[in-house]
Amino acid sequence: MSNKLDLSKEFVGRRALVTGGSKGIGAAIAQRLLDGGAEVVVAARSRSDTTPAAATFVAGDLTTNEGVKAVATEALAALGGLDILVNNAGGSRAFLGGSESIPDEEWQSDLALNLLAAVRLTNAVLPALRDSKAAAIVNISSTAATIPFPFDVHYGAAKAALDYYSRTLAVELGPSGIRVNVVSPGPISIPNSDELRKQFPISGDEWFQYVPLGRIGATEDIAEVAALLASDRGKFITGVNYRVDGGMTAR
Image (cartoon, rainbow, N blue to C red; front, side, top):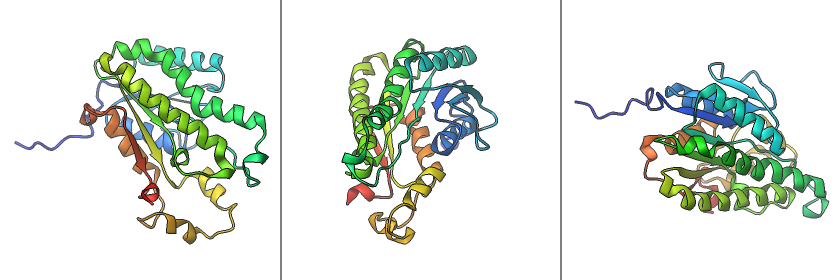
């Protein structure tokens, strides 16, 4: 008898909500959960041509408390409960003039999207997660929380706060059987990041001198780790931050 796992069925019967799931890393995670048999709702401001077709789409603005509550209500109504929450929504604008060039409103915007969206949505769906027998929260952070980038300090600070929040939540919710983990992507090939790298006075090849594996990552690399943490394969993993960065932070 083979003990090989059938990953095409590991999420059968599981219900998942993925924010920022219309494109990039979020879309890859949503598709990976769908491929494993999950029922998935993706939430974002708008659809894109890469939004997984098999997912239920919910439009919403996660930067406001009202917007978060609306997304939670619609998602839970569509799913009838919740087993997996992936807080992936995030993003930022770079300011090449350094930290002093970042206006106050950008700090507020980054904190709302990269930290408070996850906090508010988690609070909104916690009752449903408590009713699940296999509840998992996966928060998508960034290696920017670890490596100082003056042009993006507002983003890194918000993600560092998300990391601390996630560790604390893992301790708090552990007795309820709810696991909380973090995935921190390094340089990943997505349109926004690819465009950002073009703004710097170094070539594409020079970027990779900082990555021991010598290449940029793919969205599927993040999705596979998120799937591990959301699945029964990771049933004894909580409070952990997985840095998927080709070894960049090891330097």
